[in-house]
Structures are given as structure tokens and as C-alpha cells.
Image (tube, rainbow, N blue to C red; front, side, top):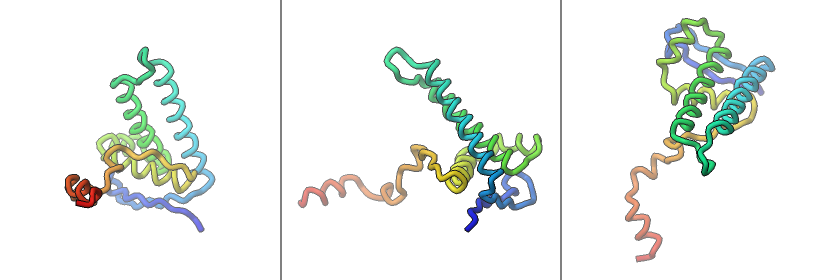
Length: 140
């Protein structure tokens, strides 16, 4: 069965709903953008490590910007956007672009993009009081 990713073009000012199919062409586009992003990570990590081997905050920021730019470039490529439409993606939600990119990556290439820190927290966990969890575990 075909895998399809749906994108509402109204979010970027285009009166069109896009249905991205897991076609060979789309798989190649995803593969190219993903490979380019990984190569970008390698360049950042190789050239900018501190003496202790850790990435600096500046390097971490570069990596986050690389992910955002990759998501923009990939969306523009898959949706076949004009330059003006692509420019509108710069004002679009980064987390929404990340979700679109992540869904395409998973459905087209079976690769899971690592979750961002805020996605790791479960909404149910936010409602619970950590003190109550400790008391339940101790049996008191």
C-alpha cells in the first residue's frame, strides 16, 4: 500500500493540499537532503570541537539551524515550491517543518529522525506530581 504524507498548503499561503506519495522520485529527494544534512553535521563536528571533544553552544546552534534549513529545503523540493513560496517557509513553524520532514523521512526511507527535547516529554507526565510517584514506589 502506498504511503502518503499530507501537507496543507494554506499554512504557507498556497490554496492547495499536497499529497506526497512514497514515489521513487520523492525517496531520492529525501535521501539526498538527509545525506546532505548528515555531511553538514560531520563538517561542524570535525572542525569545531573543543579540546575536550564537546561541541560548543555555537556549534550546537549551527546544527539546529542545519536541521531547520534541511527541513525547509526538503519541503520546498518535495512540494515543488517557487522561490517566493519557499521564502514563506522561513516564517513557518520550525517544529511543524520538523514534523513534516520527520514524517516524510520515516514514510519514504524508514528512517526515524531523533526527537527534539520537547517531544520526549509525555503530556501525561507533566500532569503528575513527582512527589506522588516517589511515595507510590516506596510503598508508604
